[in-house]
Length: 169
Image (cartoon, rainbow, N blue to C red; front, side, top):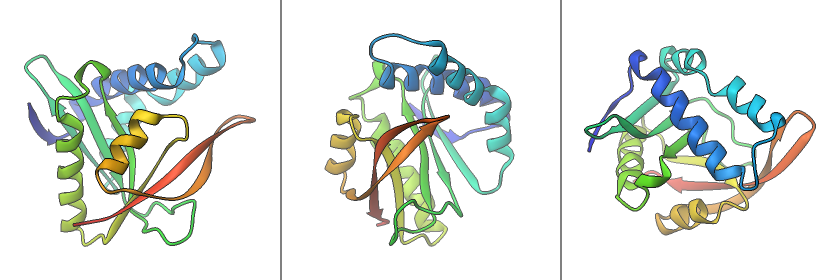
């Protein structure tokens, strides 16, 4: 497994992983047109290329012999939905489910936190669905603390998310 900074040529792989992980994590009973439209509109190679061009984004990938198996995106100047957090967000953090438990997430997070330290961030925040027990357990085990709640919105629908923060080592 190699960690490296994402490049423009990774855009389609990042979009595919985002669709796979998002649908696999949040759509447990089936895929409706409502959620399919959301995923296909938001997780596109074009949108990934735009993020890769944005100097406020830091995207790191984990790559094995076959290709990318996970990535993390740190966003600067990202206001938190609750008071008391920095403006540095772990905006996206996806590892393919078949690669869970191999240390990929821990290595991606450690490298992202190292990047945050280099940019003098004192803390980072992130959100996750309040029902995503595996992610919540992962974050808590690594020292994140729940600091509030917010809602993820798709059109007129709202989904409870927890907000977690961590002091950058």
